[in-house]
Image 1 (cartoon, helix red, strand yellow):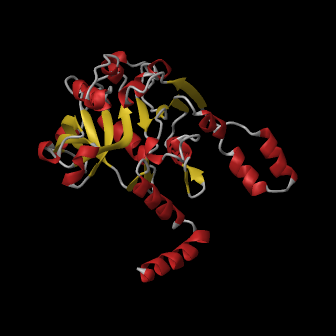
Image 2: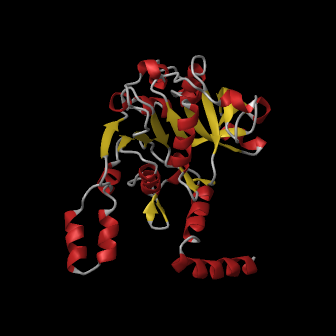
Image 3: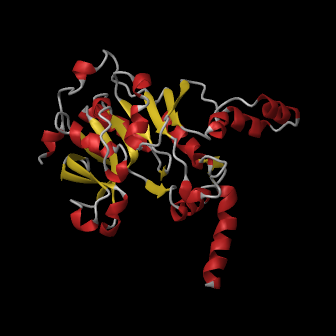
Length: 311
C-alpha cells in the first residue's frame, strides 16, 4: 500500500465521540484471570501481583499508562483480587512505621504507588467469559471516547513506554491500533494473528485477524501484543456477546467486525516483549529487568557465568 494512503484526514468515530475527547485519557486493565498456569503460587495471590525483581507485574503496566498521559485507570477484576486493590491504596500503618524508622526512601516508594493524578476505578467481571467480555464490562466507565487497553502479562522493556509510542501514532492515523510483533511460524496458535498490508514507517493496515490459528492456517506471523487503543465503536461489537475460540467472547472477533466500518492499524513497537503469563517468559523478564539495576548486575553476571561453566 502506498505510504500516503495510510494518513487519514477524517475521524471515523467522530459521530459518536464527544467534542474535545481526542486525548487518550482512560485505560482498561483486564485483571480478572485466575492465573492457573502459575499455581500453586497464584492460589491465594493474583497473578498480576507476582513480582518482577521487586515490583508486581501490574505495577509496570500502571506506570507505563501514567507515563503515557493516562488519567483514569480502570481495573476489571474478579474474585480474589483484593491484594491488587490494596497495593494501589494507602497503607497508613506501614507508612507510619517507615516514617518512624527513618526509612525515607522506602516511604517515598510506597507513597508513589498511589497515583497522584487521575483516579482508579474498579469494576467486576462476574463470569470468566473472555478478554472481549472483560473489556466490555468497562463500557460505561469509558463512555464515548477512545481508550487504551493494557494486558499486564505482556511486560515490555523499552526506552519509551510502548503506550506512549502508540498514542503518538494514534494522533497521526486517528483510528484503532494494536501493538504487533513477529513470532515464529510454529507459535501462531498462541496469538491473534493479522492479515495485513504494509503501510507507513512500520505501521500496517489490518485486513483481517484470526485467533490462535494453526501454523498452516495463519495468514502471516504478525501477532497482536497486549497493548491496544480503540475507538468506542468496539463496545457495540463486544456487546453482541458472540463466542469464538475456546467458547469465549474474543476481542479478535470484535476487531474483525469493526474492520467492516473503521480501519485498524498494527503498530510495530520499539522494545522487547516478555510473556509473563508463561513461566519461562516470566523468568526471562526477571533476569532482563534485574540486569538493568546497577546494584544487581554484577552479582547476577557472575552467577550466570558460574551456571554456564557448570553446564
